[in-house]
Image (cartoon, rainbow, N blue to C red; front, side):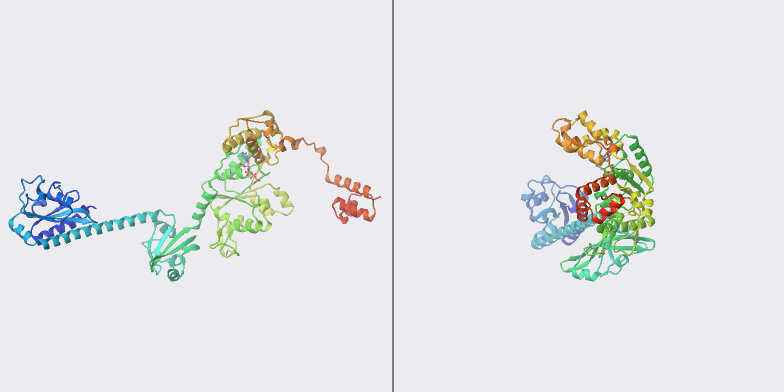
Length: 591
Ligand SMILES: Nc1ncnc2c1ncn2[C@@H]1O[C@H](COP(=O)(O)OP(=O)(O)OP(=O)(O)O)[C@@H](O)[C@H]1O
């Protein structure tokens, strides 16, 4: 504790003491610096008194005392100025805080009259000085408290302003008490125009007294803010400020929904960054697809990626997103085939509170909202139910979504990349996919060829995948037997790169040396290594021929009585009616 902090108060008190008692006063701090003085020693303010002086003695003792005979008193014996001392009497009174001496008040008599005045009124004088010492101590404590409060207030302000949510404290009437910078930014609070200044300006009529009375909090309540041309959708929490049983108002915390969502995205999905360099393959057809995709990345038009399962459609979708202007915005993938039909709509578009039994309080944001300003990747779009295709088409036409159970249309700014391993054009012909939606999606078509049509990519992919697996599994396999390479090149890869990836991982797991041999491959590759191309076209029998052959066989064996026909239909696994229809259609004679 430093007396110097209240030096002007200390000097005032020294002057007051001197004018009451009519002797000179010196007050020193815990470093024996003379911080206040009257009379002869005033000119020495700021200097140190010697440590063996009576002040030093008073510090060591921590008690008040009177020196009636300077130079002979025990306190004077070690004083360096003992020979020069002209003092007639002295009084020392320590200033204490929590039993610790932080300074000393000293009275110095320079003539006999002053000495007599001190000696004749010792008790009252000591009482008076002790009170003055307490006064100085309490002034210092008060000062320290004020400093602590100021520090706390500054710390609190820094903390509040560094929080990424708008915070507004209001009194019981809802009038603003304090708000942080984020609140100013969120609600465009203009102090000069004094707008807005009450919580009702932000949230409409809210039953504040109910919250305060019941000491109830609100969590994640949705709201919409609208003022002139400015509007946003947000969520807020409200927590009453209650100390003991007294209420001091409510603290509100606000967030803009789109900001919350973008944070969620960054954490949940946005981190898997993909670049075109990560798509491995040297074949001309893959290079051509990469070129097309790179061009697509420069625009914001809708892309439809088609290709068999495992060819890298998601890889391309991510690369298109991360090479485009939206790269720092969310990339939200959703697999339309993996989510049950009843849930898909709310997953895509979100729902409002109370939209259905079991819906969450405050509702839920859909993937379109999550993808705002970024990209949504609609994987397996070919499996989207027809009624959702209609809703998606409306989104693509107006770029607005309507939540399940919602009443308003929410504008969205989302780039759409869709993918499918189904033949969408065929689905359109069969009436399973809306033609208008197909054309809306197919603005930039990208077709990824299957691996069996780009065999030259197999070797480079295997090297890349071997390296990846070695790292993943902590192995150091450097070579692959030439027979294995040949087997891998000749295999048909119905599961494309995903199957190749799994095969390499299997082999790395099985391999106990530093070279992968045929023994390490899965059985399906060793025993069924017959590529699709190796099957001769003439080996394939048309279904119709097979049917005619089997029907004829059944009739020849069972005969053509009524019972025989029933038995034949059963054996062929069809109804009797179908059997008769086929006999007619194929003109098979029953005799
Ligand atoms: N050219 C490639 N280079 C490197 N890895 C690839 C390549 N193509 C595909 N892969 C890998 O193969 C796996 C399957 O890729 P991806 O999921 O992108 O395929 P998909 O076509 O979207 O599959 P599905 O149709 O089943 O959704 C992933 O692990 C991916 O990293």
